[in-house]
Length: 81
Image (cartoon, rainbow, N blue to C red):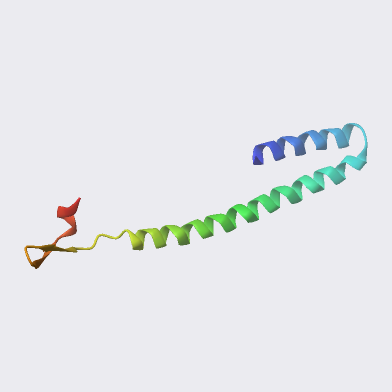
């Protein structure tokens, strides 16, 4: 998506230079769109880091207690894979 925006911006710059300066408005809109894309991408990356940390904490290796023969057997997490 960002490469398409940059390509459209390049075409609009060429068109603005060759034909009509009114196309500079389109270039400005594409620049704003690109900056908005950067801000949204940065915000999403921050959210993903928080979610990944939560998943890592939830999936951490911990020992299990299993009922066996009327007693509870403690099994290390390495043996339960």
